[in-house]
Image 1 (tube, rainbow, N blue to C red):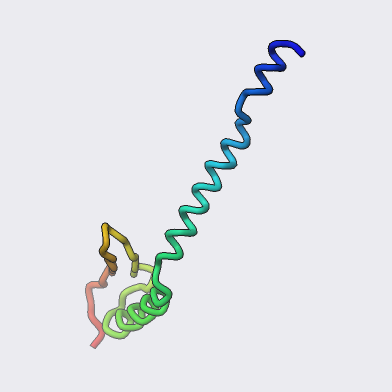
Image 2 (image 1 turned 90 degrees about the vertical axis):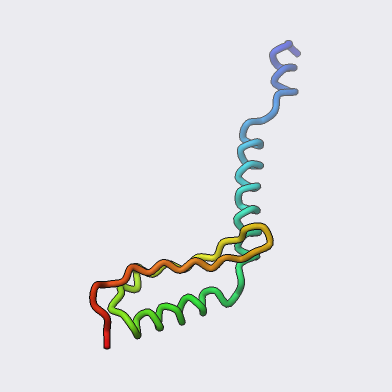
Length: 87
């Protein structure tokens, strides 16, 4: 066995390291999705209905997001309102 073969034997496999890093990213994403409340999609739909009832806003211009900061959950709602209002 040559010295080069011996060095390659103890060298860390790059593909294994890349796969491990990818797995960490996937696990982190799954954990963040588990922490989001089950009612958020229903809440978003109801908010869209209310916005559509009172405005001519395009539903694609309504954004509902849930953020966590420390021990607090923050519901962020961004709506681009049109110039005119439905009466």
